[in-house]
Image (cartoon, rainbow, N blue to C red; front, top):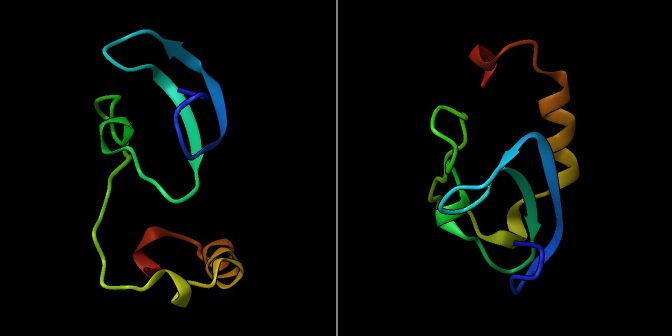
Length: 76
């Protein structure tokens, strides 16, 4: 997976094991999303959502600060 186009970093987590695609892998990509890798592990809680947000409007530092201030998911 680390050699796929657009992959900036790939990390194997403790539950890493082979499957149709690796289970237990976290990847950071730039300019591309591989939908078949999102939520590959049944019950892992990962999801892919389409939004109307333009990429330039998302301020990552603001998002991180907001996420760190949440006490529970109910505040979202």
